Length: 246
Image (cartoon, rainbow, N blue to C red):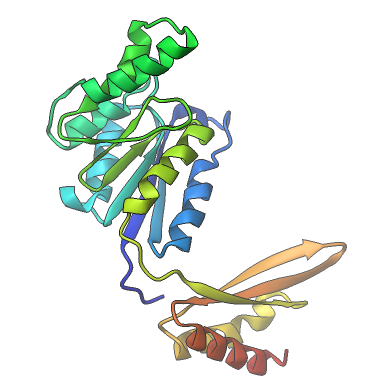
């Protein structure tokens, strides 16, 4: 699909995702949000809680560091435990220092005091922010994320992640959301592959896909046309219907 929208990647960080212990849902949520505001998600990558792997991924994905995409969103690794190394990895990737952030600390202390939560060294780890970064507000549990370069660093806890996504959304460089039309046919993918290919070649500016299904003893395929221009999408779908006799 041809587009002038900003491109993006999501970097999911966490051993628990790679082990299968935790089902990842943050990337799925953010993918829907980005599509709705006209940012083209191009890649989702998952890495372990290892600082060198995170640094490598950030440098490969953030355009301000010579990476591939306009925007990078990370999930995970900014909590209070020893394996939460994302903040240090971001600092290393951007060749900057990291220290306690007074603004983050004030917000967190106020919440702790209001709830009678003791201040511990582990909790204070969440106030360590790379130098030069801007904070991302966390309306759910106070401990902030942060934004450096074109990288937006957010928590892995789903409720906190969603709160941070809501916080950054108004400031993102939005574009044209895609539109789509779908057609459900009781035919296998191989039976409609030639027609789908012909329409895809005729409408190279659009994205066409086929998704097989099986339910109640029957099978079929959902054919989807996506693009930024409704008239083009509708024309391609009409062409596809005519070719397959729908």
